[in-house]
Length: 504
Ligand code: BES
Ligand code: MN
Ligand code: ZN
Image (tube, rainbow, N blue to C red; front, top):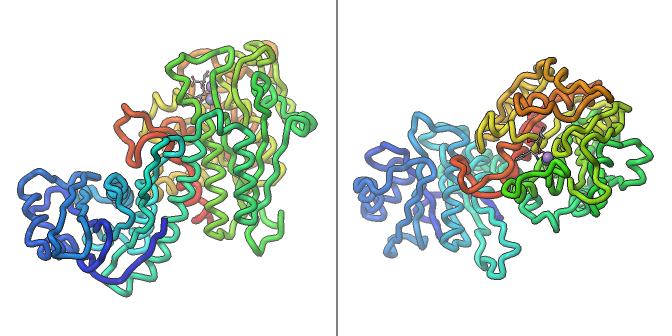
């Protein structure tokens, strides 16, 4: 998508669709919407007065001018109530307008910068939000439809009257575009069917990113993992015909010599399909498990964004990738695996596989002497029970400043997280009679806390945070909160990119 900022009035623009906005509860339109309304002889005012259009957040209405303006159609998007307005609402409104434009087959759209006028948002962040929202809202995954849509929304112009705001808006729009595009990159990986998105597919994608943006990538196969001693990851991978891959993607900023500064390490769960293994899942729960590599996809997307934004901070992405399947060689409940740090793990549930592959990756992360390690994983159904689908991701950390950074990045990116406790008791629940630890506590209570306590055993020697993104990674039909549509959300890319952007 080509995103530009143009100085001028919205009324004069020629595009397949003009986008203006309206606050819920306002009797008559204001700002750019008012100017357009006068030009259209009060058409917008009339349908607001009719009560057919309320201006609820994301609500849209379409008008067809009779030659009064150059544009073919006008989309009015609701911003919700003005006292509830926020940067994220500007982003969501832009997303709704872009989705509407895509639905109407528009190739171009000229939009006001929601919130930069009456909303009182800084021009730069408002433009970022509108660019980002447009990318996210226009996203479609149509690769496997024989009749794929021929028209795509390829041009979005942000229109601003005040010439003094244009430069700031251009900078914001660029960042928003990068973040939106990198989130969509992750969404593509997650939406791919699991027979296509295999561990080797993820590894190839990481190598493509490295080649395109000048990063360093390394991919370890079984033999290298065996030499290193990644027994937990190898154990999970045993039941699959697909070879496991340990993916490393390193971004060292231009001036920095490799290793001269401590990086932030991002670790992402890369289970390309989770059947549960011998502790098999219910048939109905299984198809969604193609999204069990969403943490890994978010890590690749975030490192890509760091490189595209030329951030001054080195960032390393680690993605342990494999399938959790069943065959004659698959790992069993009661098996004992040895992780990279030598700790032994009694398998009590083969469906608690994510923490096993993360364990080896978290141990591996230590060799970077990282400034911080953050892992993202669709780790537990319990996180979803606690916070709700589309509610928030669960964040765990014993490092208060790191947790604070993540919470702040969540507030500005709109990708919500909520802190949960890491009580030492949770660890006791996984005491094993035969090994150092069990991989599952055995009942469903505090399942999300127990999984974090398990990971803590392997995240030693650096500031660490764990983010369980299961509630946020994949939007399903029945769910109430899904601002940018169904399927993969790309959750974590914008959160991490925002965090890294503001690191110093
Ligand atoms: N990938 C699942 C968690 C999940 C479930 C993510 C639903 C998204 C939607 C994970 O591997 C898993 O199966 N977790 C188990 C852990 C249990 C066996 C301790 C769970 O949550 O039931
Ligand atoms: Mn599982
Ligand atoms: Zn899983």
